Image (cartoon, rainbow, N blue to C red):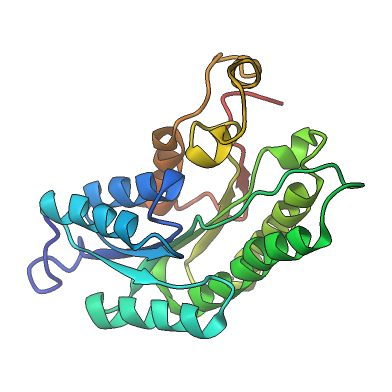
Length: 253
């Protein structure tokens, strides 16, 4: 549905910013929110071609989108990202922080340089984006961060990744309480095994099949499954959900 201008219909003009919006789950979130009538600011780290394709998909469908490059751990870059949303569309109603990294190794073997890089993106990046979102999101809006169901599953090899996402959950819970009186919700989505390039990279067919079989629904999640959850949290229908971690994993415990 084409986005209407504020003058044409102020009740329907809503704006979303999606970090990590050029690929994987973030890309699908961009598509879904655009379909729901949002103008979308697509934040990306390095793949300008993929971010441009995401914008083109939205625009060709009659929507509004712009791509902005920003390192989520760089506070000046993130401030500029949010400022671009203000300049282009006049404000923000939804911020979805989907950008993240995953590094897997046993705790005893993990290179500490990889640990630092992981935490820079996943912890500092979440904090920097959440800080700007807390200042910018309009009443009635939503902030959605991304954790992982691995926080509860605790698979070997995931120690550093789980540690970083546990921090994301902590920041999310605190921010939800700090925004008391603002009419802004803050929630985390924690996907399970989801068929993205990030998840599938380096895994053989046997491993993928075993992970898919863990869920009672007996399949991997899809980016669309997760985007649907994000869209619900961003919508008025999901506005009573606040300060929660939604483990979107097909029933894996």
